[in-house]
Length: 323
Ligand SMILES: Cc1ncc(C[n+]2csc(CCOP(=O)(O)OP(=O)(O)O)c2C)c(N)n1
Ligand SMILES: [Mg+2]
Image (cartoon, rainbow, N blue to C red; front, top):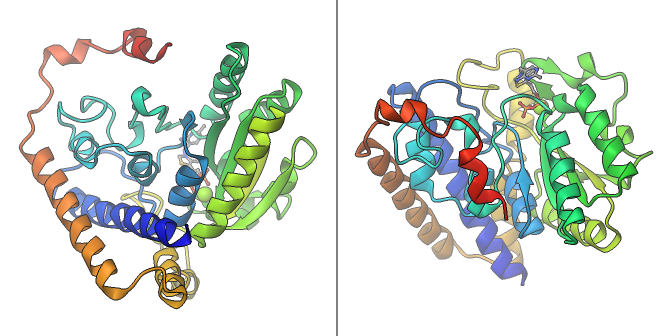
């Protein structure tokens, strides 16, 4: 079991990392424009959460490439979306912050901080009204927990008893503002503890995230109530491509890089005998080929046509998602 999981985690985390390194290069080449938020350093949270949660509606913020990949979105369709091409998963109209695929129960990329939290509660409530027990996964940053909608969402989720797993990825920063400058309390999970069970997990350890999420999902679906996890992690890049991140000391960055989640996974997997160097190299090669293919697909895809400017603007696009 651990061996299979280690292989899956390594593949998805490497895929996420390579994909985003390439995104950065393609942005600098001018092939990607607009906003681009990378999750390099945060892969253990994204992969551990999506794999651990398994099936179910997923709502997330704009730093979502790795989440989409882990959910099974075709890398070619993601890259084409970032290139603004008609073959992109959102037909080239959304870009990096708006990956969206109802067929995968993937509802966001949401650009407005914490706006998707009430949407998540609504989605879970809808499932409940339809007599389903399915839990809904809601991922958001530390900064989102300072928004009013965060408190509205945890209050309603608890009051209405709906199965939402609130997963906060605490990377210590909201753009350039460190949590010590914007939080009146130190531990984020304490904000939710009066409403629902709440715990903290090491977000650099993919197994720890996975196990916490599996437990939490079992709880929300068994009791039909919400649960809160705060995962401590760190982004190795700036907030977006427009941010060099120079408000952080090199020492701080190095300290977190020494706990690079992929490095930790490899070290543990080799120690435990779950993976060997040969398997790792094979996965690396496979990942490089997939990412290269996604870039070629995006490069060779057409731009959206002028007529496309006027399509999919209103809810016709959502009708496929309504059961
Ligand atoms: C309602 C709202 N306010 C402000 C912004 C601008 N903004 C974009 S990202 C961001 C920081 C969010 O930080 P966090 O929730 O910790 O997520 P992270 O980027 O660290 O993953 C802000 C303030 C926004 N998009 N929406
Ligand atoms: Mg943050």
